[in-house]
Figure 1 (spheres, rainbow, N blue to C red):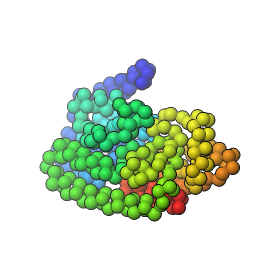
Figure 2: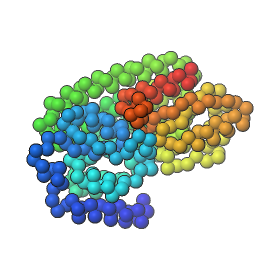
Figure 3: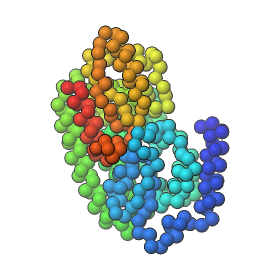
Figure 4: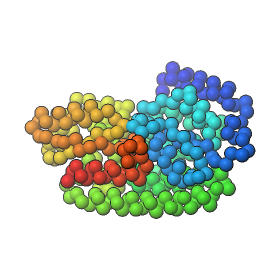
Length: 312
């Protein structure tokens, strides 16, 4: 992060502290308040916290459907919202790449922060491309890792609200059972495809955890972060791969502009092979209310349905 951006973040945080630091936030000052005020960064986390917190929490999500967390920059209003929250929940693993200093500042001020990264077994994390010191943040595409995320949230909520432990534990147990059922559904649908047809080509490299968990070879046109742009050579190399493997369909993503995949489709056609765009996958956010995929479970089911139906 350059010095100018650091200065902007410092100014935002300092200004917010002037507004909120002289006294406890109004929500905390209200002794009649019976719900935790939670701020979660992504749509996936907002849904997860709602599932575990149930009636004991009110959840505000910073990023709406279709928003790319890799590129998201917090506004002064976002910072104020987090300052006033009882608990802030974020993914970590550099997913919210432009907000790292804000989370660090919140922690240093003593705010209650739940970082999903800290509850994960590092040995199960995949490398960020060729850098083994940094990990791929897209852990929600492996349902078994999302179960660990759920446990981390339940523990964090209990730490913030010990009297709610029984409720959080009960909600966690119920949600873990739903996740087990979801995992079985994904595996069942994946088994409909012969192994040689399990090749997933998408706009950016978000699906490696999915591929490892469910037996797909995964290729992304852009890197793990959408901050990295695909060049002409990237498009040409991936087009050659598609032609060589006779892949039937490639996929756009809800949080990434479709132009890169459309360029890839054109490059494949120029090589004498037609590949269809098999549909839109939800990668870095859930769908909206109209999509029918506005929860984590509905989203991952929608993804596997789209993938299998297009590659059959």
